[in-house]
Length: 551
Image 1 (cartoon, helix red, strand yellow):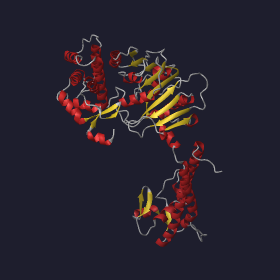
Image 2 (cartoon, helix red, strand yellow):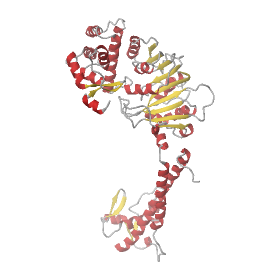
Image 3 (cartoon, rainbow, N blue to C red):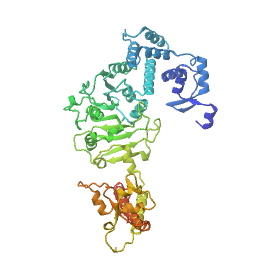
Image 4 (tube, rainbow, N blue to C red):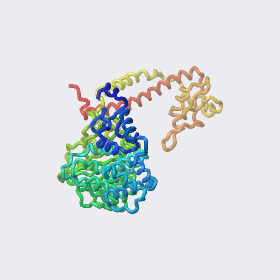
């Protein structure tokens, strides 16, 4: 749609914004579009995210009186909230049972009456979808992790492999089934789920039944401690596991056969869920796991990460945009695994695709630009840390090696050429050591108010004492020996340190030399660090093809 056309119809709104205006769910708005021929026409946007003229929508709502009174859907939701409070899933499960024709004697009369009223104008499918959508939205606004966020579901569907018509899909921590039912929505797949919360498992099963998904089976139970599907081998396993849970049953599961990549530590519950998911794949089967970004680099999981890479199991890691996980602000990854078809040795030429979308909008495209993706060889991943963070590997690949190398080399050359100018011209001395003649202790100078300290470094507070002269003699070997302990550590001993007695002009002459020596030492240290960076950059550039030797 052109800008002029958009201006002609005024402000445009989405279906979600219409739902908020009318106090209904997005499913109800979709229903209106199908049911009412006079509903405003699409004025912009895309096929899956249409936009409507706000003026036309408001006029239509006024005509239908849908924006002037509380809708029956809102009244039902409010009644459920009043009865069930934080146990909303229990209420939703009982409503779904009633919609499915199952007896639900513990459903309060007020709620049951509103459900009967609504089914006169809405189908059970639309009603249960609307309630699900409202629950997902309320969980998002409350920052709850009860439901997999919509943006994560979108990402999982985007990166999921194509499934054959007779595929089996499994979710071992399926919640109310949002992810499981979404990722397998395009095919008539057999869907199996397990969920520890009984009400969530019941609601997921009832919703699938109402949707006509006859091949969906969801059971209650703790998947790690009591696997209800021990013999299941799926084409695709998806999972958004509980994050940060340390009491996942490690002590009772130490000898479990599922830990073929290594026994997860107590703090690495996500890697226990990952191996549980992998144990339920058939040869060639895939796993898509939602992972906190920290799992990619934490020390405790290094061995398991190394096995995933070494055995060519890990195929892709996707760093999702900030804000994707609406229940918290932590970065989130999607790990994509595939069980090798055979039992032979891992492919030495295998690579892991790293995708970094962290610079994108959470509602933007999930297709990476060329600079957001890289295929990383196993040998580059199997180092001391086995860091699987996509950004770590992409930064190295998209560096301008020639420019960095040229700039760093010029800086090293400049520093080296300056070194000779920093070294003072010194001649043979003509007498006893300066500290063998008349001296003064620093303690006496401090008591006289001529010496102070800045960040533990002595400074002159008198115009009769030069700071560089003071510091230079304090760093001489005589004073250093006095201030060095038997363990070799250095700490200035102000009581024992001494400096020679000289006039201020002579002090400044010595101080100038000491200042040049300190600058020389500092440049030498910085040249050493720059030289290390330059050598590392050159090696990395040669290894990645960013640099090559001159002909």
